[in-house]
Each structure stands twice: as structure tokens, then as C-alpha cells.
Image (cartoon, rainbow, N blue to C red; front, side, top):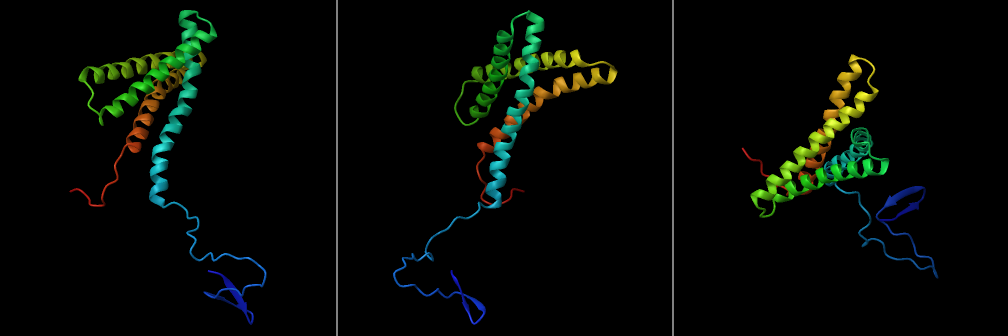
Length: 179
């Protein structure tokens, strides 16, 4: 709706007079842009935020994995980074397969293979992260924190990727609450 000034008062609901020779469209039937509803924003946030955090944590984990591979195998920087990317990517792909297996008919052997990949890459990632964090530890507190951070980092990546996938694949409820 447009507003007009009448004797110093602004009234709503009246249309401003048309100026001759001036083209104007009737904007009353135009839908206009609206903000999304709060529940839609929360749903998108609950889906995207865990994935964003998991990607951020992967960016923190990969240099530690690469340096761990370099120190253990005496490989070059490129090989260390390729191994780190392969391990973290295998972990994410296997977790995605487990998430999608709930929606599709997948053989039990494939599910257990994905479980093995997730467990194996998580343990390897934990070990290499702990090794990299221990390299910077100078006292007992640093050693304890290196172990905690080295173990928690891959677990957080797994948990965040899992919750993001669950929200992305969730179906909206009808509003009736279960007892």
C-alpha cells in the first residue's frame, strides 16, 4: 500500500494521485520479498553448520596428518599431503555411505566395510594427530592436552558430519507429538 500526506497527516490505504504522463505500475498485487520463516532458517542452520564445522576441523587435521605421515614414512611433503587428503576423504565418504545406507537397500557386507573404513581411518587420524600435537608439548599439561585434542579432533569431525547428514535427510514431522 502507498501512503499519502493529507493536511499534514499520513493516511494508509489510499493511493497517491497519478501524475499525467508518468508511468506507474500497480504494486498492490506484487508478492514482494519476504524473510524465510524461523523454522526454515533453523533447519538450514542445523544442516549446514555441522558440515561447515567439520570442514573447518578437517582443515586443521590435515596438516597434522601430513606431518605425521612425513615423520613416520620419511616421505616428501606432497606424498604426506596426498595421504592425509586420502585418509580424511575416505573417512567422510564412508560416513556418507553409512548415512545413505539407511535410505537404500545396501548389502550388510558393504555396510560393515564402511564401518571398518570409518573406524580404521578415525584411529589412524587420532594416532597421527596425537603424534603431531605431542611434538609441540613441553610439559605434562601439554602432553595431556595433546592426547585429548588428538583424539577429539577426528571424533568431532565424525560427529558433525553425521549430525549434518541426519538433518539433511530428515523428514518434517506433521506436528503431532509422540508419547
